[in-house]
Image 1 (cartoon, rainbow, N blue to C red):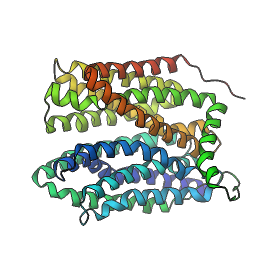
Image 2 (cartoon, rainbow, N blue to C red):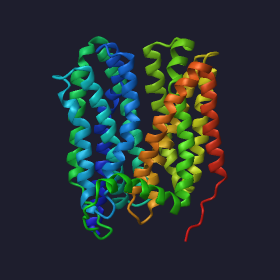
Image 3 (tube, helix red, strand yellow):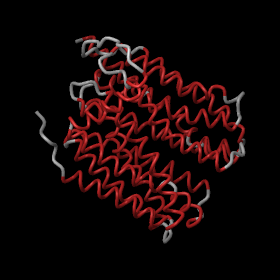
Length: 405
């Protein structure tokens, strides 16, 4: 009992410190596209290549966690190495400021950021009770998001004064993030199943087995399959509108960088932080499918509110605040879905499916959205994205959890 209490305290502490210490690098990461284009002279083609590679490596990161099932001893090393490698290249930014190095570091970050999620979620699932883990995860995420609001404004002001400071900010933020690994290293992972023996397999088996296992999981777990397809459609709607956002902001609204920072950092951040405790309470009262449907319906209003902004810029800020509210629920649902659907099983496979599905819609959505926005205009694309979110929310709202023996 004493060990269990200590284990829960260690995990809770690690959850908070991990989010808070990781936020500085996550914040400067959001500036890197702008830094590449404005200060390093990267071409539009190289920026586009970087954006295309992010969802590709997200899909590939699926393989990092593919062998975790039945191997408790691999969970913590898996999460620790992912946490180290996603930050390591940024430590060298003061000495390597080449465009392609920064692009490689950016894509590398996305690979390892996604790769470490299944192991970390499984550790949280094993060490924290259901209900408590959702509350703590939501609260820690909300605090980190509030921290990000302050950091983004501060970093933006510093970069306006001296653009060269991005090198120090990247290096320092990566070093701060590495400190979180010291907390994770002390966490004891509860062992719940017998270890499966290591078996030599062919390269073909290594490549194909994770996909077969995921498809089998979707077939055998109807509730999980319903959730995944609902998230896929709604997520595709949000990915679809991404190329339309800069067209709307620059060509239609003429917003400057400060106005964009206030919308994306302050308005969205306030919505996320203020709503996070409410989402955690809702999670305790209704099923994850019902929470997901509410999330999708709320997010569906984001593109519609943006479509009103050409008539009054206030709607631009209202839209991002509303998006922050929806994202607070989406962040909680997406991360906690693996542990919830897994029940007593290993959750890494479930979270792995989340990761690969996110990568697949990321590969399709922005490219399709760019074509539609160029041909039809941003308002029409915003409406399409809204329809997809509403469709997913309504369909999921009408679904009742399927009883499984």
